[in-house]
Image 1: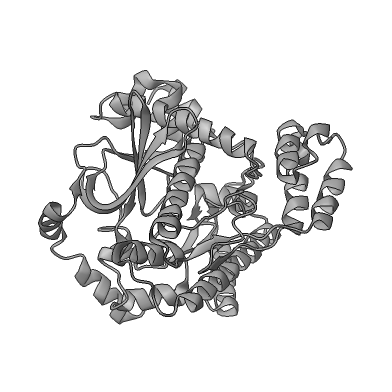
Image 2: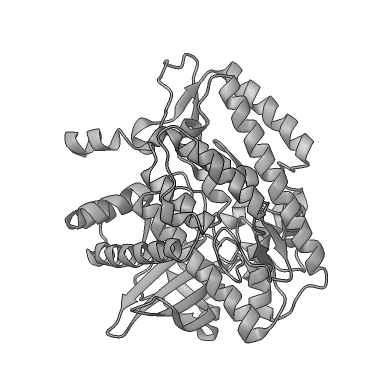
Length: 457
């Protein structure tokens, strides 16, 4: 790496290196985690029999994949890649894109977790128990055993993997679905990009071979195509009234967010309108008119903030327009004013009521089966066309466990602040335990990811 590259990397999480703490602080953090896990009923360890089952399921995988090829669509020659944070431990979604004369085809490939984890396995029972993966800054409690999730279920580069592919043919003019196909596939990811590398490819496509080592410039061109599509989908969502609480999200995050939203929406469209089956739909009620008025008045009274006059008729558009124009110091206050009046989203077997924040008539989760029970259940329903008898109970379970996970994360972040650690820095850079950590400035560039989480991915 050149000196110029090193200086550029210094502003990134990977360039700054981990946050250093001493052994005593490490013990304080461990004790706090144990206290929170007990409070919220979050199991940190997997039972031995579950770990053994997961380990057994990883044996002979390559031969198994070869046996599956004839029963699936073979997409191994298609340019495919993943984009994740630098510290991601598993890669459950990958994308491909092709621009044709009269359409854009977007493929979202999701790890075929239900090939390995089904209702007859102990791992399934454990996923129902846990409900989701819990992400604390620099500490993760997994929904599925990492020995499985980070190996055969992870779409690592240059390895054949089983996937569930959502193939979307989009109208070039309005980006509507012309055709949706959902099927089992075999893919071979060409590259694992970090968000930083994806940004670099967009800024300097000529450096593709440096970023990707032996990969071709084709991926740089594909990344540019999918960014153009994601940017259009993002702007279209805002125009149609989808709430966007973090207007400063970078291009790489926008690509993944928009592609996953498009795929999730396509799958639930298929389940509801084409199959007419129950599933785990994501329902987000809207605040009452009085609650929205309360939030908008609070926002309007902030120093230096003014809601555009033509946006008041739709509160979501009013918030979007205000966030884009407001001083940076007021962004978190605007976000909090909205979050205070927003009802919690929940999982239901009936999609009607829609997703207010996204302004989607029907919505559900499909793209993260490694870390969310809802996605795992929907994969099983899509594959088997069979709805679990206890679907309503599963919806309630997933909703409750998500609430517990979010509260646990909130309290742990508050504790980090109390002991003098910046949760954002710890989350982005990780932790290293050293005997005499150097004093370092706190990272003040905290993103509004918690706010965006309420609007979904």
